[in-house]
Image (cartoon, rainbow, N blue to C red):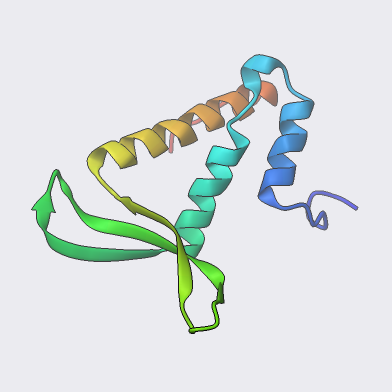
Amino acid sequence: MNALTNKDDLLTTLQKLNKHTPVDCRVDASGLVQLRDALAHGRAFGFGPMKDGSCLRLVKFGGKKDQDGRVQVTMAVDMTGNWFSQNLGLLMDAMAKVTKALDYETCEF
């Protein structure tokens, strides 16, 4: 098995990374997985006029219908400028920590 054939999901991969890196290089595995899942599996809806700089709502639904054919909303968040800033910060922090842990050099494109 190698990096291309390994079937670990993202959470498992990040937990393994955290286990083998110094404390100052550990990433917020659950936060990164939640963000990835929301963006990959959620739905973005435009709603109403811009209020507080947001007119997008990100909604993620559960996978199974109940006996009445309804699905559970597992997450709903307004994608405000603050939401984007916080999540961009989460990603930038994780990238910096992984770069440091792997002793990579970063390059601007």
